[in-house]
Image 1: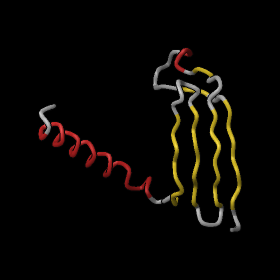
Image 2 (image 1 turned 180 degrees about the vertical axis):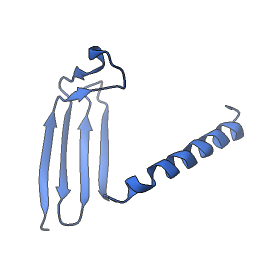
Image 3 (image 1 turned 90 degrees about the horizontal axis):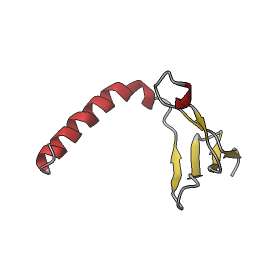
Image 4 (image 1 turned 45 degrees about the vertical axis):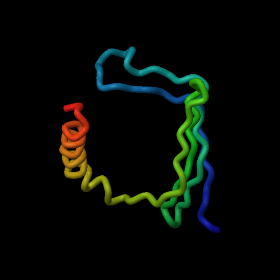
Length: 92
């Protein structure tokens, strides 16, 4: 199938919202390997965190570029649903 490109990454960095320079740290040994179809906007990748066999497998899915437009609304709904779930499960 046409349009697929492979991407790879090694190490990287981790950042937080803090102003302290220690909040931005370089990684060591973590990797990402994946494929992106530039024609169909499909993506799949694996992140290996180099931490006790922890990894993330993101199976093939289509990137919805419009999703960011709904982020705030969806996040607010997520927070409401989470509060309700905690109440229903004795955690809230």
